[in-house]
Image (tube, rainbow, N blue to C red; front, side, top):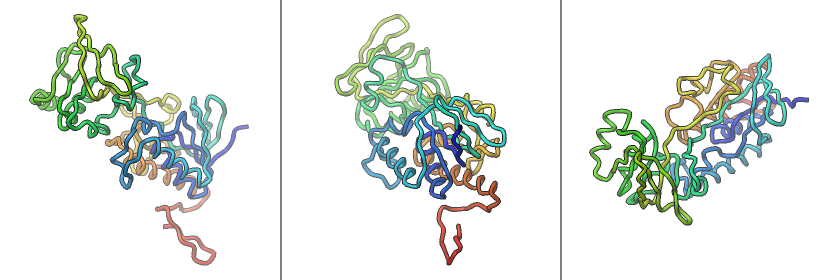
Length: 323
């Protein structure tokens, strides 16, 4: 028999865990389903731009958020969601079980596309990065390379050029593609070298990446010494299990409005899988908080209650006042 919850949150990244924490604090029954803990936070060995946190890491923040959520009585299940059906309530089918919920919060995040090379996983967080805007500051005065496509590569090149001593931009085509002004800016950078008609053949190093071998369209190899490699090939979002219930934009992201509302009245969403413009941990946490409170208020209204506007309350006599 399927287990029943008031709210089920899909995804255990910063958005999902933040949503779940605010739901569980209100004593609503809540289950988080995720294939892993932390999502893309696990790609961050040193976290410098999360407000109020110094010398932390993505995995450490993920574990902290999980502990906070569990301390309020929430439940976790590491599994993969395969299908969601809706008829009065939601039926969430995973690889191992079925669950019933009154409302759901979607926060599955996204997964960066990789090159598929040998040693790529070995050097993740050891010289290989998938988020230039997150990790470029670690390479001030160093030699870097970025491989990618379109606007992702252009943005990476511009950010790195402001910090690194040398930047190699590697791309398959004969010329850069994308915004003309961004291309013109990159072409004027003296510390940027364009390597066109090329792909990365291999990545080598001992404890960290120290060189990559590049092959061009003529089959000629070239090896360059680097301190860091940024892979900007875009990302993928898996929403096949729910795309029949919510509206997606042309990028495949969930369209949300204020409070994490989607096109479905009982589904809320947050984080990188949505159309929010800034894909940052701090933004995802705030975004998840909104979606979590909205989901809780949805359940409250089903129960004939007014809901809350903030996550604090005061008890006066026998009455609890929410603010």
